[in-house]
Amino acid sequence: MYAQIKSLVFGAVPTDWDAVQILVGFVVFLITLLVFRQSIKAWWGFLPVLIIGVVIEVADMVFLGQGILTAARDLILFTLLPLTVVFVSRQGWVK
Image 1: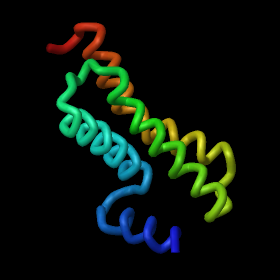
Image 2 (image 1 turned 135 degrees about the horizontal axis):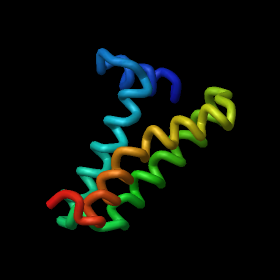
Image 3 (image 1 turned 90 degrees about the vertical axis):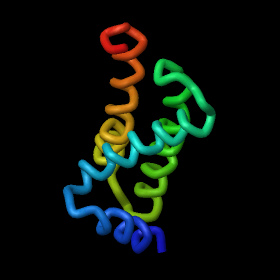
Image 4 (image 1 turned 120 degrees about the horizontal axis):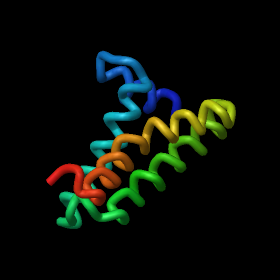
């Protein structure tokens, strides 16, 4: 069931699975900021991205038999763009 749902979600976007993970992580970040009406500089806005990413990768390891290195790579892909946006905005490199 989990594999079918994941396949359906990733199959809906006509691109590579890695690119979809990056996009989904960023969408989760943006939705978090919009729902809680917070600044893009808020570190805690990154927390739901990290939690959801860990839950997805644990589910991948349990239900799909994915290895830990693949899960770590996927988690990095899922969190990289939101983490970069928060860091860059907090440094004042963008306004």
